[in-house]
View 1 (cartoon, rainbow, N blue to C red):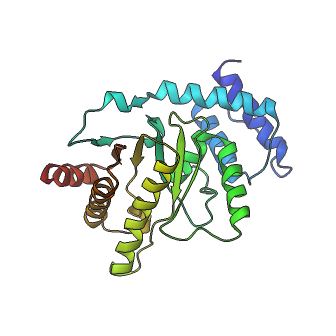
View 2: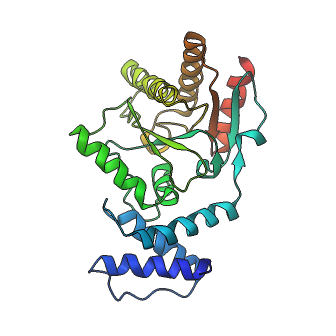
View 3: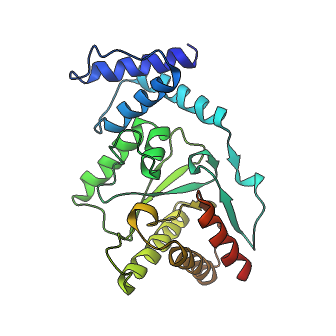
Length: 259
């Protein structure tokens, strides 16, 4: 099957899986088909699916990611020491692990085609990731506390692992506890990555955006925490600060140039 045939196969399988959508018309336009497939993946509850679906899904997603362009750690130049700064889509980054800014349910974003990083990571990793996360949460027996982290396979993403962490949500002014919890997100991810022998990690801008942590202070905490961890542990782990917005790029450029 070519990409178009794989996409239609996946759409029809997901439509048939949910009786409410069985028989729904598949649009002819490729862009609309992609949105439909992503939406169906986003709203699908955690659950197993047959190997035939997974084979086609994995081939489709990997080809889509490859066509979009993959950036490897080897393509980047360190800004200082073994700290890197890269602007782009974190799901296209080949490194040891990427960090997902998750919610406390930890099974991804269920809003169709939402632009958040949680949605993007779960979409392009494939439906296996949501099931892995659901199993972790079932074992844990409660929602994920703010400031901690979990690790999973990355499935179809170019990285090896995904680290999921829940950052603080800001209501009003940033408190010392908010700052402590954000620092804990970075520290927890670094420690968990180290335990799993990860040699490189890419951090998104945890808690900024819809979680409303001010970008400047969030970046300061990120850089401070990473530098402190590396100094205390003598870790040689390479750390990539991944940004998407120009504002965050400018902030990290200034902070890393000062250190």
